[in-house]
Amino acid sequence: MSILKKGKILVTGGTGYIGAHTVVELQQNGYEVVIIDNLSNSNIKIIDQIKTITGITPTFEKLDLRDKTNVFDFVKSQPDLEGIIHFAASKSVGESVKDPLLYYDNNICTLVNLLNAIKGRPVNFVFSSSCTVYGEPDALPVNELAPVKTAESPYGNTKQIGEEILRETANAGNGLKVIALRYFNPVGAHASALIGELPIGVPQNLVPFITQSAIGKRGQLTVYGDDYDTSDGSCIRDYIHVVDLAKAHVAAIKRMEAGQMDAVYETFNVGTGKGNSVLEVVNAFERVTGVKLDYRIGDRREGDIIKIWGDVTKSQNKLNWTAQLGLDEMLASAWAWEKYINENPF
Ligand code: NAD
Ligand code: WQD
Image (tube, rainbow, N blue to C red; front, side, top):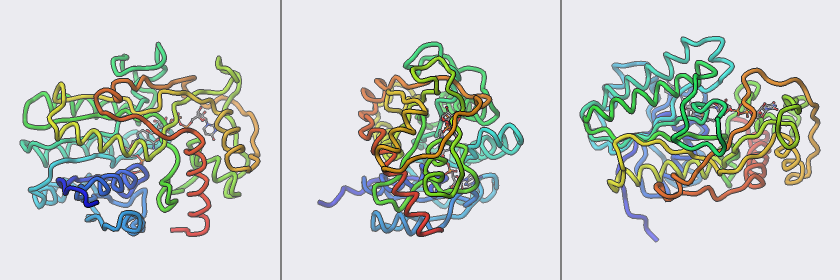
């Protein structure tokens, strides 16, 4: 069945983990996709992988969004751009503490360059935000009306500032419409195992460390604390399959295209609405894969919040989107990707 051809969407950071999965979903929904990426945390081979999955090679422009002149020139060359999904940013909490200016430059200046380049054009803009803006929520599940807390890191602050810049720019009434998606914890990989989270450096996040430890690339997993006020003492998060997350971006674009927004700036939680503890994730990985994990209980990690999971009713009702995949599928797909990338290093 042929898919109705839709508009052109610019995906910044489109060869990255979430970006690549979103490009696949956009193409499979009939959108023409143009990717901007400086390949600082991804690999050009992802373009071939996307082509293998969808049969369509996205247009790719290697470009650093910090380069204002080139950003202006490129956007000017795309008069038929209908939407932008802005993934390009640095995302390591730990690195941001060590080098805040790198994060304000790469996560804020890039956004301002992009917004100036499209100024006055009626563009639908989707922003990669994060549940990190909530800090340690006062109530669970956390909904979009919960107060934004003082950021625990420069990285988290760049997401809060990014939301403020977008809200104020959209409210200035220059044709920009914005949906900020507040991701919880994206994990897993495409069912084809051809795209996933690229292993650059030692993973700080739980699931990539688990899969790299399981395949022998890393040593013992440390569970950062089991003395928290939770059922098994380990921290709780709302893990969401990256493919479900990617589909939420398509849903956001469709909402804006259909003129369904209640305001020119909206935020949505993108999670499953369920929480799982670290030890539950470890046990689920062992059960799903049959691989015994070597792990120990270590000290708490500074800056970790104890528990968070999302109230996703607003996304269900207004984005017409609900996560479909559970923790088992997340972990099985993460393991399939780990085995693929181990045998086919980029
Ligand atoms: P990623 O690092 O895999 O992807 C980011 C992409 O942006 C990379 O391909 C990188 O090369 C590119 N990029 C970075 N700086 C750039 C620049 N100056 N110019 C052009 N390209 C640039 O990260 P991801 O996990 O896919 O995250 C995508 C977005 O989602 C980020 O904004 C991140 O902050 C946000 N986010 C991620 C998570 C998560 O757990 N992965 C959670 C919440 C929010
Ligand atoms: C999850 C749980 C750890 C590693 C971070 C960023 C957030 C977003 C997603 C960008 C915690 C525990 C982890 C390990 C462990 N990124 N853990 N051993 O911290 O919830 O969120 O990534 O936007 O902004 O803060 O995810 O996967 O690092 O940790 O025990 O080796 O796993 O303590 O409880 P987190 P995470």
